[in-house]
Image 1: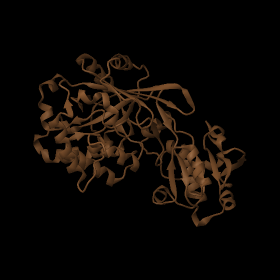
Image 2 (image 1 turned 135 degrees about the horizontal axis):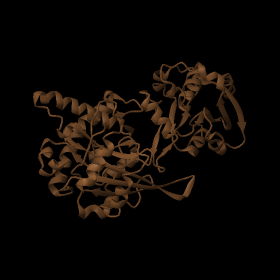
Image 3 (image 1 turned 30 degrees about the vertical axis):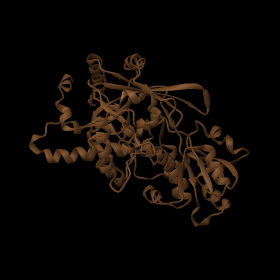
Amino acid sequence: MAEIQPVRGWRYAPALSQQIDDYVSPLFDVVSARQREALYRNPLNSLHLTVPRGDDPAAEALVRLREWQQQGVLTQDVLPGIYVYYQYFRLPGNPGYEYCRKGFMCHIRAYDWADNVVLRHENTLPSSVNDRAELLSRLQLQTSATHGLYRDEEHELEYYLDEAIQDPLYQTEEDYQGARDVLAVIQDRRVIQRFQQLLADKQVILADGHHRYEGSLAYRQARRADAGDSYTGQEPWNYHLMYLTNAAADDLRILPTHRLLLELPGNLTAEEFLARLTPYFTVLPQDDPYCLPELIAGKPWAFGLYLDGQSYKIRLRPEVHAQLDWPTTPEVKALDLTVLHYFVLGRALGLGDMDAQRTWPGVAYVRNFPECLTRVDRGEARAALITNEVTMQAVERVCHSGAVMPPKSTFFYPKTIGGFLFSSIRDDDAHHPFAACF
């Protein structure tokens, strides 16, 4: 199944490690415009490589990369290793408890989706994939790790991870999302081979980074076509940098993403919207909108609705579910968000199938629950649909069914950060003497 390899990571030089908070950055798909401008002002921030800007962003990133390497801003580790990456964080509902998501970064072979080794759970936008492939082609450097999930009920690798993290390479005080990030490395050949053996019979679910992963696939396919008969399959560009975490871990968190209706089609009134929901849902008025997450927690096909200052709990009538006739798997049809998109957006609001809904500008995806209520109260939106989080088991069921989930179904928290580790896929890296050890 999954083939992984250690990497000789490129990292910020030891002299800069004490200020690592100044150089890390959010990933390209979550960084806001305001965050970008603040980070770009630091000439050594990793965002200049992960999300470059300019008339030819990839070319400007290449110039900067070469400068950083020549000036010793980035240095390459002598020995290959597997990089241990821990994230310590707290959640609003339980601020007294500190979670720790444990994982490690390495190279994984860039498998095509058809190989059924790396499994996706969402679709991608071609334009974003092309941007990532172009950046990879120019830099020949993996600038940020995607997030993959394997399942090991025995938690065997955690012993080695816990041991390594006692001697960190560097750590943040607090990143942009409030998490504390710690990096360490394992360079023991015997231990690395055990990691490889355990992953060898696993499938990997791609949690975050579908565009970056598909960018690696596109670049690999182009290089393979150019290589012709000289292709061996061991070239560095056959591999992709991934952060792997155990799906069986207790500290793996998926947060909900709520739907904000910026408008109602045809300028429906609140009464008309509720009337259109009634054939499909039981609709129960509630006194306190801030209780909606608690009222729907753990209840399948239940949602909170905040509409023109009034809150409701809505829940699909069980006998109605059989009407859901989108051409997808039973595992996808069972999801709360599929129900929401089919019966609320598709049926009640008349927006059609999922493809038609993707082009409708009247929906926004918001993770912060109080923000949803505030924006409705301010008149910035007509209604908010409050959702439950998707479980890891549901994600696994959908991925193994070969289908994908509705857009913005999962928000794995916390996000990994850029700037902790870069990995080269240059041809000459394959011929380094230490590479032969693995």
